[in-house]
Image 1 (cartoon, rainbow, N blue to C red):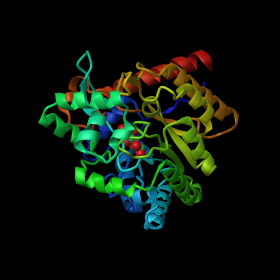
Image 2 (tube, rainbow, N blue to C red):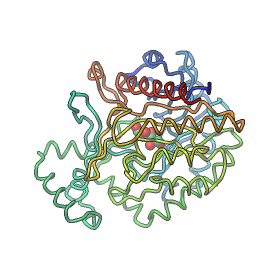
Image 3 (cartoon, protein in one colour):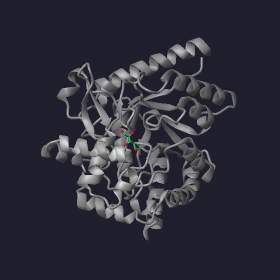
Image 4 (cartoon, protein in one colour):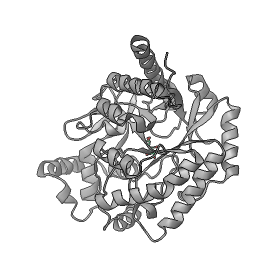
Length: 396
Ligand code: DNO
């Protein structure tokens, strides 16, 4: 039988209400972690990495993946300090390599990481899910941020829906929407003010998608040789949502984007985090086909599902339900594992994590990062490993 995927769980560090001991009980063996207390761009020292690694090992777990070593904005905008920050990034990769941590996830989303409008969307069973409501984002853009020329990005119908939504919510709800959309990096409590966000937007005034793509390629060509030397596999995380928002360009949203990225600097060290939830928010992304075609470049899997809605909105569905065919995705992941085995690759146990989870049962008593409940994710992991076993037993 082909070996299992490596079951991992994200842990945000010692302040996470979800403890390593709890994660151990889920059956996961790997931890996905980052040094969130180090400001974006600063070097992670060997001591800090070792200390964290020892903490994880002491709980009987392995630090499998770093998610994320975030990329400083000056690299994304080709600002004057970009080479300095690239040197620092390389220093962090070398230090991680020295400590034996070899898979590094990152993203190339301008300013904001993932974006949602509702962090407590109730499903019919009263479980709490994350939702992206397109009219809410449009309303924020047009009437709260009041971004110049924002109207050009929306059809007349979308503008009408945005206005109707905006008129229907209270002042308090407007504030809440602002805080939710303006939330900064995961693992921090950072929230941008409108003024700060506008300053960031200005920095992108001459960075369109083409330039952003060039800046990503520049970054990769600078760091990949060092990653190869350190034995590190980089894996880029797709945009979430996978389309431009708030006037910011996106370059990691489709199969073509991912192909351009791997081809811009061909190397085992230049790979992909295949996130079914992010990519699956677009109906034109053929997820099983993408796993098939991009398979050799996949170094990390984020497995979850979304339910797409007709107006471009979506919410996070159960891991195996929703708009995307998770059976077909898993089957193609397993076929990729088989190919790896046949060609003598040693990375057959691709790390996977149940990405996000609903808040269920006792989860409501814990203050966890949005999407990172324990029971909801445990449910996802249990379903996914059952799916994996069922397919493996029947086809291998
Ligand atoms: C959301 C996550 C993302 C991801 C980063 C990767 O829950 O999947 O925030 O960690 O985008 O750099």
